[in-house]
Image 1 (tube, rainbow, N blue to C red):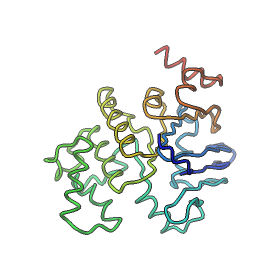
Image 2 (cartoon, rainbow, N blue to C red):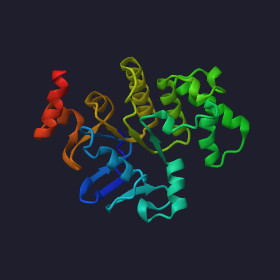
Image 3 (cartoon, rainbow, N blue to C red):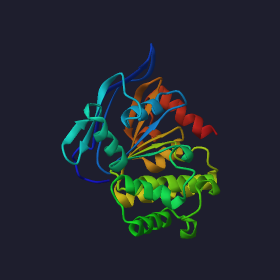
Length: 260
């Protein structure tokens, strides 16, 4: 993990209410460069709501999300003007959806999916864009002869790899992942996890990953937050939380995995 001790992201008292129902409540944490934070909990625990609030997909009811911008340092993303926030989401941030179709344009080629994000940050040289797209397809283990194929001709696992290439091509510092291996066969999951782990390590990425799968959390994350009914009930180093859970809910989660 990077030893650069300048905070990349700070979340303070983040709360999202749906009427009187809690989406997430009073969540606080800091994220450091090169750190992978896993957010776990059963369905309905609030982990996806939290991820959406942190990643500017859903404006929270209260609290703040501050990001260490390249130009101005730590800045509340919800105090940014809309074009500034959109630029951040296209360049320094990336979001990997559980269903790759949510993160891809299905009616344009694999190469164009990757190239589009480059064009969004001002690259206009067709040859460069095509070469970079080809390079990124090979990085995510998609053969270069698939460059001009539509994503709809790809398997689910390959679509997920393509979504990852599309996201990482602009060199983001922070990647949000929502159940990135959900819905894939176990063998496909294992290969994708290996790929994600090597990309995160080699590129020094900071990642916030939501998953209900504790094996995925253990493999990818340095630190873990456990959510129940919108509250963070336990947090700490991943191995510490999973090997010696303190909260009854975490103990239940861990024991249910051990029994399967």
